[in-house]
Image (cartoon, rainbow, N blue to C red; front, side, top):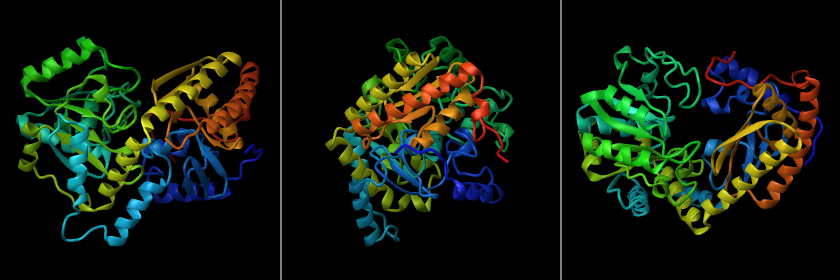
Length: 442
């Protein structure tokens, strides 16, 4: 597994082409090479199975990074999900008629979430959140959304940064540009901070009589307090507005379904994507009948929402996730990785902060993070690992994989500690420091 030289000739050539052909280089901000270390990060893959990724230069890596940004919860090219998908493709993925699997998926999701009565489907998390918000606005005949957390790229969400350019900075990443979002949406998206009851009440007060919905992730960096959950429930009920729980990141991680089932939230709508299809495009909006039936009073429709593959993949993913008790395994793996970071930080006298919710965790260097994490990433690539500040556990990760990761981390932390003491980390970068926030890529 151990390497000494990074061979990334083809990857660099593709990056150079992509910069000229694709604005922003990639379709997803989180997959841009500058988020890791541009000039070093391989960027493009040729093949992937389990947690093994082979890049376009034929380098093999074990993925201890962001695991398909959380989409491949079981692991890459999962045999059982692929088998179901291939069978569906051979029978035809899209016709004039609708696939019966979407009815089966609706039944399965509602069975897992007994509070829900109905389901609609799309193919991406951002668009699914937009559908949920539109349904809520139709149901209440009101406009303003009070929210916390990250909910995608769409107008309703980015409107928070109209007139308040830093409103979203501490919700996910800084500098999200609302260019292209109509100015008429100014004041329609009002953020609050998770677990901050006073901030939440102030946001509700600002929305006033035009409150259409409360939108939030069930968890991100820490668990909600019981008092916070009770206040959210009481205000949603008093104001007669739907509580929308965004499970795009958290869903199918800590339990069989939405994290809200374990945390104590009682939503009116919940939205799923990412893990739901194990890498195949599918998203779901499930909810109570009183609000979901308003979807028929709004124009919400798209051709590719009716293809077969997404629903088939989701059914296969859910069945296997439950059968193998994937959440228990992933929590165990994430717990071990958390301990590795904690122990190695102390061992090598490197101050780090660890956060997130298991099994989606991250660490930050308390000093000079963007340079230090670029060096960490660079040297871990040489060790045969895709690795950065984030770790998304997959069912395919094994305890043996974790042991290999610990050995590699120990070597890299030792080298990094020495360079930090000598103030020579940046001089030893083979690529560029990592970037944070949103910005252009040239």
